[in-house]
Amino acid sequence: MSKVDSEKAFLKNYNIHDFDVPLTSVDMAIFTVRDAQLQVLLVKRAQHPAMGQWALPGGFIDLKHDKTLSDTARRKLLEKTGIDTPYLEQVETFGSKARDPRGWSVTVAYLALIASEDISLSRDESSEEVTWVPVNKVKKPYKLAFDHGKILGICHERLKNKVQYTSLPVNLLPTEFTLTELQQTFETVLGNSVEKKSFRRRILVADILEETGEMKSGSNRPAKLYRVKPDSRTHFFARTIEGPR
Amino acid sequence: MSKVDSEKAFLKNYNIHDFDVPLTSVDMAIFTVRDAQLQVLLVKRAQHPAMGQWALPGGFIDLKHDKTLSDTARRKLLEKTGIDTPYLEQVETFGSKARDPRGWSVTVAYLALIASEDISLSRDESSEEVTWVPVNKVKKPYKLAFDHGKILGICHERLKNKVQYTSLPVNLLPTEFTLTELQQTFETVLGNSVEKKSFRRRILVADILEETGEMKSGSNRPAKLYRVKPDSRTHFFARTIEGPR
DNA sequence: GTAATAGTGTCTATAAGACACTATTGA
DNA sequence: TCAATAGTGTCTTATAGACACTATTAC
Image (cartoon, rainbow over all chains, first blue to last red; front, side, top):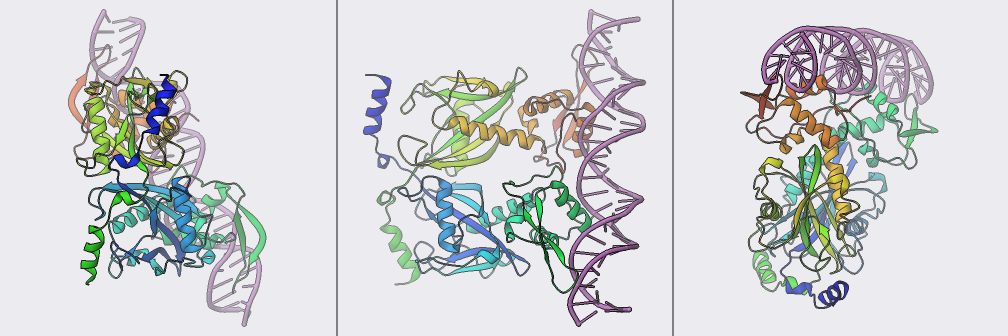
């Protein structure tokens, strides 16, 4: 029997249910900035286990319809928020015997960033409650199910770290924004103030934005509106932003 | 029925085999520096599928004995190399319908760094061939099974990137080493030269090493031997190392 | 005019790159 | 003594932080 034929025979007799495999799911930390606060999307679980508890949105891979893991993540995000082209980044995978009462389970955690303007919450058919919660308030009233508190903590850490040396926060704003709005978004995520001149120099030298030609006229001097240059990927700076000395 | 009782009833009737779940495994890119080259450990697959092809070491989670995902990774590393306290970092999880002929599968990729001095290859009972291959030569003679070529590429990228702003390469050396040896290890991983004075300043200011008091006398002026300070974690620099301008 | 926010000029501080220099060993 | 590698002094360069300054609007 040739090698190819023997592999065919092997696969014909292969049955995944002959083996004990862990449950595998995807969970998401979907962040946005609203009311000058970093907020995360939580759902109230409508089903067992942990029914009635708050948790990160997520669920199992749909083996029929999802082609890749990120398809699962994008599908979940679309179900909860109606958004289909977010900034999406895989953060870490958590697997253990103990994290889910149903047995050995693995969950792949994703982080998504969206502009709060874009959101229409819960086009979801399952009647779960869905809500935004400021990340810093997730402890007391919103103790999370399973190990989701830990997962959220790690996603939040990753976000804060990356904001120190990347342009990630542009993904938390609508397509057009002023430099001041962008700076405030950085400050909200970092949790500290940023010096105006340094910030503007850093962003403009990175050459990732272009002027729209329009101005945003508020109550005082109008500000230039910018957008991210077409096709530009996340910018990585060679030095971190550091905040006040 | 109380909420707790109904959850108990739910779990009692829960059977993981009622659902289609993906195959879930762990794969590892185990790196070392030998002969001034970054090398990676490959195994020749002794079983279907992809029998006879070279691949990253890895395998399924042992639901009975592994408590967490990293237990699986550590177990695989120990089987192949006899090493049980490596630098271990989870890199990324790959999941898709297409990556394994057995069906929808998910693999969690880990990166390990070990000192080549520590290795006694293949205490493994399974009669797989195990070998070190320079990372840059993995293409032609060692076309890897499944999507392992892609996984290795991403692990290698992660390593190169992190070496630009961390002290990771200390994990590729034995416990005692000279600054020149450390510099050469950085250069090997980065693939470019590093300026001696800048390098020494950067490492010494980071305050992660201590002198052993011993000297390494080779053929010329002896060099101070250093070791990593006890309990010191990976150091993160605020700026990247950049190589020649 | 004033208040308020947008945006700039320019000095200092920090850490990396360049590169010539000195130091210590074996043979 | 010389060859070879270890290790230093110090100048230049790049980019962040500080902070005072000017610019443009609504009222």
